[in-house]
View (cartoon, rainbow, N blue to C red):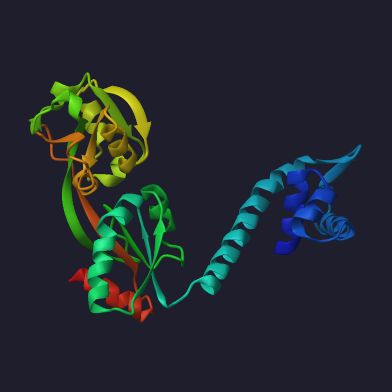
Length: 290
């Protein structure tokens, strides 16, 4: 049976093909690494490395074990990360994970209203894109996640803060009216917002375009609605953008149009871990619920 430390040493030696480098990575002496390797090989009963010149070459057995050692090593890293996060985080702050677009517009308004009622409340805003936010909401440095279209999870309380729709934003030079059909703008330079559309909308805009045979003139990709709005404001391109982000649009530079073909709806959710002991966080979430 190997200890986690022995597995970590094996992992570093395998990864770097060097006892010296492994020792440097682990901040321990080279003799300690060499001694531990010998103990590991003695315990398991076979060789893990063969020396060829100055390099250590892993055996077939070492190749098979490395994948499992990687899993253990990553679990140790995650454990240490979470342990350090609990140590570093302050319980005096309400830690909110949110997207850049909501952090620029929607979340500050909520905080302002809450601060008017609770002047001593303290907040820490953690900006992540939607995909990362979904993964990271489990981590201890986030108390409440405010994001688009969060799915229900038995481990979390989930409330809807806002609903809205997407509209077409276009550069002024295209002279697009207040209402349009997507067929009317197929040949205009279209900005695709990548990897966020299925998260930001209840149904994927891209899937809708494909399923209904719209032949859009894709000329640029970005993973941010804010970025798409900025590019259009510079005088070129069109994009389908949520009406929350659109609030920041300069109407002297862009046109806003309702889309006749479909309502691309979204909602903004607040999500909090159940049974969270922090009273300040629970009070803020209760305020959001109201």
